[in-house]
Amino acid sequence: MGRERNVLGGPLESCGADPVTGFYRDGCCRTGLQDRGKHVVCATVTDAFLEFSKANGNDLITPQKDFGFVGLKAGDAWCLCTDRWEEARQAGVAPPILLEATHEAALLVICLDDLREHAKSSPV
Image 1: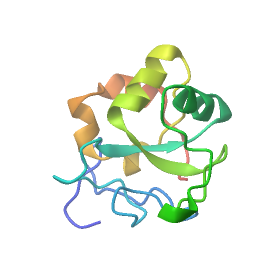
Image 2: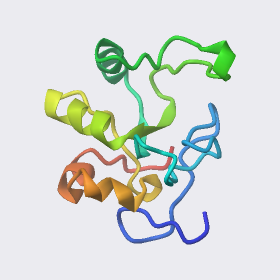
Image 3: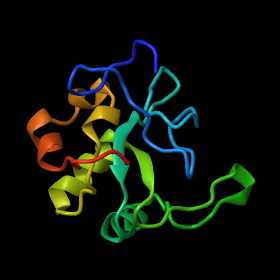
């Protein structure tokens, strides 16, 4: 993914292509000035997280055909906003993440130890 770096300092890996994730819908948790939510945490969503997110104003389950959004189900890889992932962590429902596909910008909000504690051992 070019010169983008992950939270471990290595090259940023792809997060997911089915469904295609990322703020730029390129499968990568890249960020830029337009990405106000900082969609940089590569997570494998769980039912508990999806319900938590829905209850807190961000329904990721219901398809939004007008926006080309098919809706997520447990097991899907998705680039999450740093603040929402951190809220979920504090509530005890943070989904597992892939460190190699989580952008280094996540470290502005989330400490590396917390990310490591929720890391998956294998790619999405």
